[in-house]
Length: 165
Image 1 (cartoon, rainbow, N blue to C red):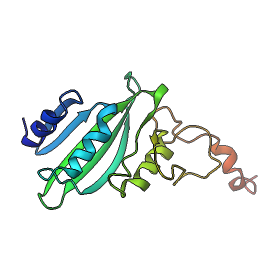
Image 2: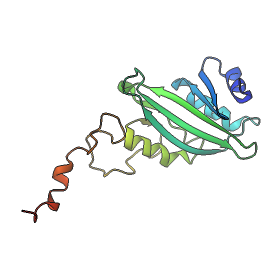
Image 3: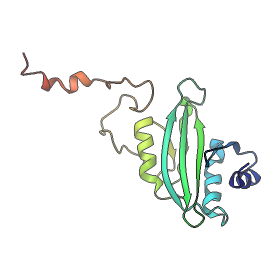
Image 4: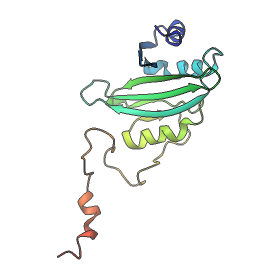
């Protein structure tokens, strides 16, 4: 097992579900309830020192019981190591704790995941739309069940066909 994964698992034995390394990239899947504590440890522990959040994204696995996966990629500038932290959430209880109090840079990235996938971030300082219009209310564009051409797209672009007849 990778030394970073061993250190995390040693501290949070019940919180780590899986550690997987592929082509030098380490990914650790954690329980949703342990996400915040593990990420605080990743930032504050001197051997870890993950001081930079690179990216926040999400994945839709529509056939799985825990449909959504939230993925945080973090980096230690001093140690030059990278880690992907993943957690899963079900559609009927679609939230995770915000990590903006740990990495301030997560604020806009979490807002994007909320806006496009519908995953809520508990204790986020400003959880509102960032890409879609404020009045957009039908679904989440990056979910696999969202129509490929969008909802109501014909009505939206009727003005293009007005002079064609």
